Length: 310
Image (spheres, rainbow, N blue to C red):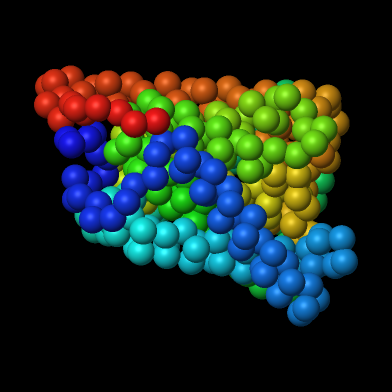
């Protein structure tokens, strides 16, 4: 059967799960690997009895251990069950370094501009400039957090925009793949009592990342962007990242909320702000325009799917 592909046309030599089954497998692997990861982190004191990380070191360890364990399970599935190579999940050889570092730069600038807009709207009160520079321990902790977010964000892109989108596209089509992978991403980042704007921004985050990966036909750029986004929010301004306090002084400037949660994101940080919504929507429109332009340049798609299995 001639199925539509993304990233690479290299065939799968094993079994590809049905489109609706793939998110279930993803969630099951996440839950199964979370148990040994949590036991390990508790054993060495990185998280407490309630499962909360202890300081910046605890957050770094949690990011590294939990996500590497999850990746090993997903990689084993891809290699043993689906029998596909790395290029088919967006880890192509061409433009890897350039794409990643370019994305990293955008990932630092984009949320910094978003936070600057919140400040200009009067929703942040600025405090000390470069307080982290006064503590060598803080700088070391930030370097460790960069490693942690490098692992976490890269693995999330490999799993959601790499594996999920590619396998569902082969079983159904690209639109279904983007929707299912984005909804799975949103579900795994959902918590009870979460404001609707936060949930909506998580979905937009996933759609933005999907549009970027489709536009570039690999996941290197969006991997770098995700790393830069998480790290600069966590360390740059003394604000929460995805509702988490990294526990380090601000790298750039310390900001204190002075406006409504609608503007600042409240306890969830700037990712729960309406400004985040606007930035992500603009980004999605930009990449959709790029995708449409590329489609016009290459002409009609001749690799039409002969059927779709959901």
